[in-house]
Image (cartoon, rainbow, N blue to C red):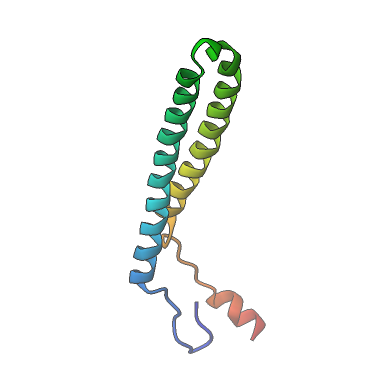
Length: 99
C-alpha cells in the first residue's frame, strides 16, 4: 500500500514466520488435546468397571463433542498458518481517488 509518491508498506517476513509458527504449533496442540480426551474417556469407562454401560453414553458424547471442536480449531489454525502473509494488496488506485 502506498500513498501518492509515498513508501510501500510491507510486513516484516520474520514477523509472518513467527506468527505462522505459532498457528502451526496451536494446530499441533489441538492434536494433543484430541489424544488426551480419547485417553480420558477410555479411562473413565475402564474405571467404571461393572458400571461401564452406565457411563458409556456420556463419555461417548464428551469424546465426540471434543473431537468436533478440536478438529474445527485445528483446521482453522492450520489454514491461518498456511495462508498468513500470502496476500498482497495494492491500494494505490483507491488512494489516488481519495487524495
